[in-house]
Image: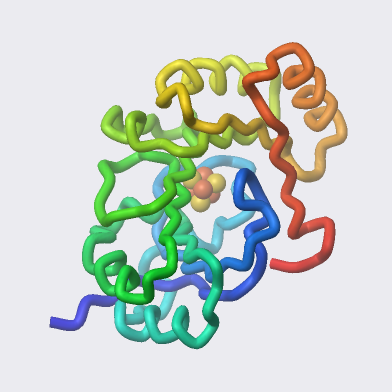
Length: 199
Ligand code: SF4
């Protein structure tokens, strides 16, 4: 049986955020998200039905042609789908597979790295916490810092913790800056791809 997924876009660029910033990455952005963050910059990804479906084999072929350092499965909320068949196919490329998720659904598939970005608009499934390699919380208000601290206590001690200010808000950047100086377990994540004007 040919298994397909709704694909908003695939592209080769740099990972712009978090621990793997600057690394050559092939992005697979899946359609479908019911988390509905008000500040979401990927609202076109919310629908599952508005996007063409591509098979695991086609996606794997794109990765092989690109030869990135990492594959990033993102969304939308990718865990709305059973990612088992996709990661099984991609694992044949022997390129590390990363997942970016809000954790709103239980994990499927096998990943080398999981970036967890919890959202208050749909709470994470508890099963995600022990699997997290990187916690990345988007900050737009002072209350978001309290939200970030709640999740920092639930991820494994070795997980790397990032606060990422909303891109357009100088006020939020300052908020994050001040918080990291006072709470050194956190690092700042910036959307560096936007600085250099790439996807
Ligand atoms: S979880 Fe991600 S894709 Fe979904 S609404 Fe929030 S920011 Fe947008």
